[in-house]
Each structure stands twice: as C-alpha cells, then as structure tokens.
Length: 223
Image 1 (tube, rainbow, N blue to C red):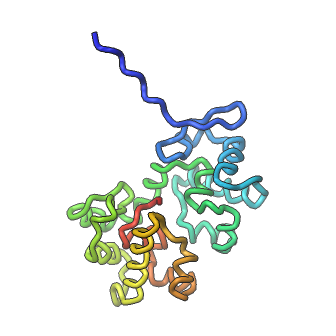
Image 2 (tube, one colour):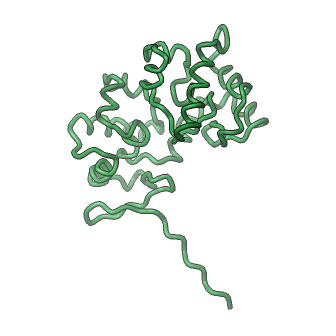
C-alpha cells in the first residue's frame, strides 16, 4: 500500500484565541466567519494600529454591500457613498482599498472578482477569444498585452474619439511602472505624474482606475 498523502494545510491567521481560515491571497475565506476581532487583527497586519469610528463606518458599509447587495462598489462609488475624498480614504487605509479596507471587512479575493464581473461582461467573449483572461476579465499575463487589447477594453466605454494620445500616455506609463517596480501606482500618483486631476482621470477612463486604466494596460487586478 502506498503512503497516505497528508492533507494540504490551508492558510490561516490567529488573532487572540481565535483562528481564521484565509484564501490563497490572504483574505478571509468565509465572510460569515468575520467578526470585529478579525477586523482589528487584520488592521494591525496591514499597518493600522487602532480602528476609529470612521474606519468602522466604512468597514460596515463594505460588509452591507457584500452581504446584502452581493457587490463590491468601485472605489469612486465607495468614496462618494461615504462622503470621503480619495486622499482621506488613503489616509484611513494606507494599504489601499482592496488590500486594506476590503481585507479588513472580510471580503475575499474570489468574491471581489465575481461581484463586479458585469463591468467586463460585454467584451469578455471578444477578449477571451484572443487572450487568456482571469475570471474578472483582466489579462492573465502581463506579456500577453498589445495595443489591440486596450482598444477592445476601451470599446466598452464608447469614447467618442476612441483612445487618444492622453489615454496612451497613461496606459504606457502604467505598463512601464509595473514593469519597473512590479506594482501598480495609486490613482493619485498617476494623476500627479501627468499633472491632471482625479476627475480628469475618470473622464478619460470611465471604467474607473483599476477596471478601466489598469485593465486596459494589461495590469493584474491585484499587485
């Protein structure tokens, strides 16, 4: 008889006397297992010493959206719903919206990919016939990208003049940044590099920053 294989140990984290199972990306595996103890412990892991009332308000907003509406709002909508400037959200959650706020709120990676799939549904079939995609409609590998990919993504936004020189400057900036640093610049940093306002950035990319500009540039959903 062959040796019995050992079961694969799933990632987990312990805060106080309670252990929590994580998914492969370090997010809470089961949203129903979330509690405030988890939120406080995860907050410390992502660089927040103590959660304030302002933090809790945003965390419970995300949980209501996920559990009651089965969605994860895009960053701009989340800021608008909570009357927060992007700079204030970045101050509250220095690790970012997805890797900070959503992680603390117990929303996992797979759910985030599924929740807003409708945003990429229209062109998903066209793209998947030529490119390998993730379930969320992002390019599976950075090196697969070409300008046609960006043009197909941009077709969803119905831009009157298509992708202009301003769009291409930002798209190539994002690719160069990711190639050099292996990370995605924040929307604020991208605006600063191009001397434009956040409002102008979102006029250029109606699909949003991550699901619009970064996706068109062939960057991953997370980095």
